[in-house]
Amino acid sequence: MAKKISLVVPCFNEEKTIPLFYAALQAVKPQLRGAELEYWFINDGSHDTTLDVLRELQIKDPQQVHYISFSRNFGKEAALYAGLQAATGDYVAVMDADLQDPPEQLAEMLAGIEDEGYDVVGTRRVNRAGEPAIRSFFANTFYRFINKISSTPIVNGARDFRLMTRQVVDAVLSMNEYNRFSKGLLSWVGFNTKYLSYENRDRVAGQTSWSFWKLLRYSIDGIIDFSDVPLVLASFVGFASFLVSLAGIAFVIIRKIIYGGSVTGWASMVSIMLMIGGLQLLCLGILGKYIGGIYLEAKKRPIYIVKEKK
Image (tube, rainbow, N blue to C red):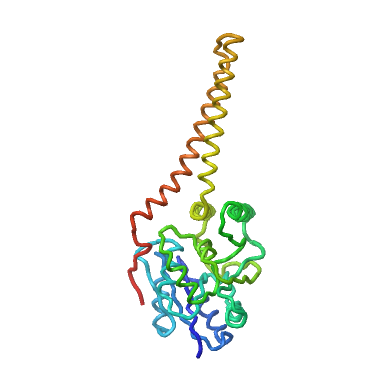
């Protein structure tokens, strides 16, 4: 019996890419061993005509195409979670609508699961051609850093684009935390995983909504979600500052005994005070990020709110 593949596609201002995405997936459908396709487009509070495009596509293909429209923008992580909850397929694939994820690799992914026994077949970019150099530098730095401080390995260049068995999807859905970092969650659940490599691709249309600062904030959230090392570092910084302060006090006392009092050195003293104050604020900021995460989890707010579903 033919399997069903659910495609979860988060959308934010993707009016130009959705028709191209749908056409590309329909073109590769014959290569998927007779599998039935189920599209779940998640409109994440788009400001353009994305929802109108999804409505038209659903009317055109009501058997395959479904959509969920949020009441506002809740973020890509919420969209992924909503799509995984709605998906009914034996296998579930997560894809971006901009076709930076090669649809033709779905056939190889399916073979990896059905013929080779993998639970997850994901993709990773072998390069970042076309990206600004500063973004590539920070991205590579992030992967090196998080893999040193976290016990959950995260593959450098790994994309959200992957095909998963129902068992894997259910495991991910069992973690209903508010603060979500999907790359980490998908790695944390384990299972037998294989990665396919491909060259970086440009968007087929439209503009990305991921600015440098959004990516930086997302990276910080990932570090906070999957490691407590920043808290340990903050403790070490505080202890080191304390030792430096003791040394400074000893120096002042000894100088007073030997040379007598003097107003000389007030500038250096102020500089040290500012440095220690800055370190304290840094440590408080790190602690505040963890407390903020606890605060959001404790409120038990829904991860997303649906305005329209078809």
